[in-house]
Length: 208
Image (cartoon, rainbow, N blue to C red; front, side, top):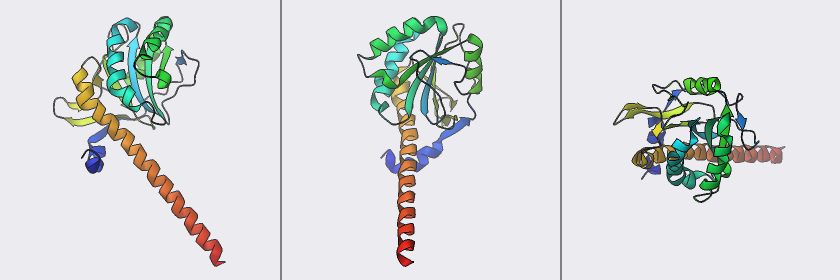
């Protein structure tokens, strides 16, 4: 039933803001190149107190990451301060007990960089004193913030409270499905268009 009404669901998963800042000011703890462009990203702000966000990370790992991490170009990105690098490596080890965290990246930057990235989401939320938030965000491949503009509880739903297991299960899980299905359908259409184009060129060559 979910995908039968997929077109309507795509419309309902609104673009709430555009031009989310790229991660060019951040460094990956793993040494990998990490960017938002051309990726579907779950963006998290764990700031300078990773310990206090462990429960959120485990909630997300169970309800969102584990089900979707093998989708091409899908990633989790946790934003931290530089002093949390060791803690991030320890957390990544713990995440292995739930699922392979190969597509879960930790990037660090200055407090100013973190604040600037968060503000570029253009939400009505704020970071706490540790430059962290319980809320996590869906950013699409062209760096748009995706969410709900007609949520039954809050109206504009910019992000999902990762400390609320029910919200992840009942809202974020569905919205992730919508975004991934959208790109699956777009890829399917692209392949079909390329096949039609090839067929037309082949037909033309035979007629010459």
